[in-house]
Image (cartoon, rainbow, N blue to C red):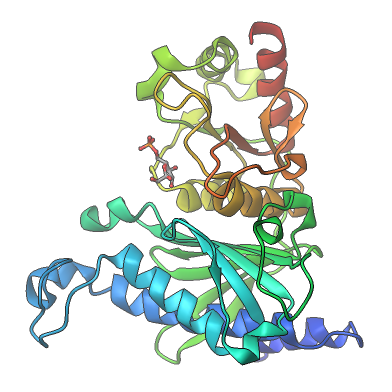
Length: 336
Ligand code: P6P
């Protein structure tokens, strides 16, 4: 087999197709790649907390042990600030957006939104977690401080989006609007290799992912769809399989490859939904659509068309194989 393509080579080859490209996006991906390697290393020794010290304690080296989501946020923020191509970030770990006001970032044209470690509560039980990122061109004038409008853009404006999944292997999966590609990390050489070129999700599937413990609190249409998934009908390969890890990136990644649907609807506990529009739903929806899937918040409500109003806004989220999304949308249209 010829030498596998590395993430760096792939990004460089993609940039070469755009003579006008400045290399700024390439540099952002280089930052994300570096931070991903650092977080990968820290997560993979999390099981040794009693040696390295739990979050908030002083570890054997006399360093304050950070919660891993705080650690991840700091590493991604520092890596993005260091290259002079990002003028600001928004993060689940930051109440407000962060303006990179050092000189070399003032003329940067991109903003990055991220969930630095989604599902981090799963780390203590050794379940895979992920980093989710979303990249936009700023709309405020270059050279001036970023504004909230730079971050409150509809998801269809995204320049790029992706996730890093820290699972049985660490992978980066991303899109720049020309399909979805997956790269698997080889920690022995510190390189991400192209392992999943041009990822396309199956048009339908037999996996549904939802926290069924909330069943009584779901909208009627979601309840009806869950019952539909559970009915015995071999001609449509039902009953489907229920698979729910409790880690969005992991559930989405499995469904992206095998086909399936992930749902986090409104409920009495989360009347607006639980997941965050800007740095969870929009990037995952961009990936889903680029891989042939769909992502909606409800009937005739495409995630990528929602105009955000707040930085940490929550929305209902249904994402996955297009025929499965169409079916649950039909139930929502009929039953509400
Ligand atoms: P619940 C993790 O906290 C997360 O944001 C997603 O990664 C995951 O799919 C969901 O929430 C799990 O939420 O309410 O089912 O525990």
